[in-house]
Image (tube, rainbow, N blue to C red):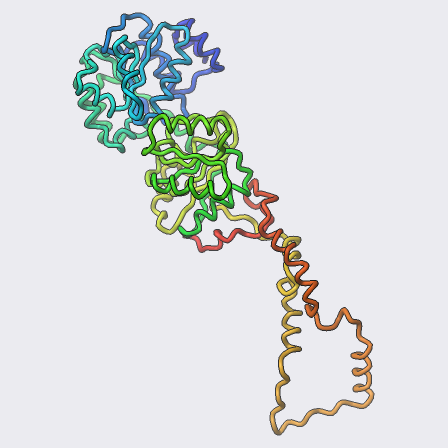
Length: 479
């Protein structure tokens, strides 16, 4: 099947071809024809399945004919985060290049002036987060009674962030005859109730969790104590062929601390979290995309919707509290057919959280454990470490002789045997005498041993290929 088979206009097909796409994804193949026929829609899908284009493409054709009015957007797309809203806006700009459509991005963290001017000129598509939209609506700066299409994206995420009451209020202000599309990764009872209330005889589409079963992502859990996390992160960043990486944490304070610590350790690192304004977030993302920094410390605000090419690694510094967040986090790597690696740091307190992740994904995430040191590495150890028996002989020579118990007479040696033993001692070779007595030879080898133990060369590429010493943070019992 091709995009031409879905009923899209020639102008839109040209834009899709320019963007480099030839075949629709499963959700696009099912959703686009239904939206073009003006049906309500429920799509159960995650990011990475082509969900955004499944509603952006048909909306462009539906809105191609119509008249704009000031402060009365013709369509509304609700997104839970600024980053997702910005990504949808980029999609409209890319696919709507051949159409005369006006778009406005209504999000927090930026000045209202430009947003209000765009609304005053009239927009065909308004992409907004619930908080900023409610703010302008309550101020009387925007009217929703001219909205023909509504998209509620990432509905389960809206639920987690407490936006459901706002969405219900917004829906109550929209025309009853509108077309409504709801997308969600899961369908908990609250979202099901929302869909039953505001959608009319919707078409339901469900696609498989492609991101959770991606064969392009090598997933590992690393068992450790909480105090070893930073040591472990530094080790992986230096020893696992990391080109670009996103390090996720559950708390904003941890994100800031990680960015500060990694900078002190000499890494090129940026940060992105909910306490930053939108301009600062965009600036950090641009630095990351351009390669000026190659490590991004992030909270879950960045887990969904970020489409950054070439991310080689994802590190879950904290095991995510919600299993869905795990899927979205690791989905930042292994994109567009590329290979990626994802490491999740697991402590004893994370046993339930990681079990929920494995239950959701249907995957028993393997424990990361490098192979034991190769013999060649062990040979570089100091003589006292590599020859314990000789060291014990040396200690025995230095130890005082034990007194013979009374009542036991020393057995006399035969004259010939005693003379032979005395001659053997006198003519013995120096190399056999008193091992490890030459301190200079031992000390000359110590720097070489240390260099081998702490060298960054020879990073592991797959489990079992690492021949260096086992990192200290892995010397813990399994949780």
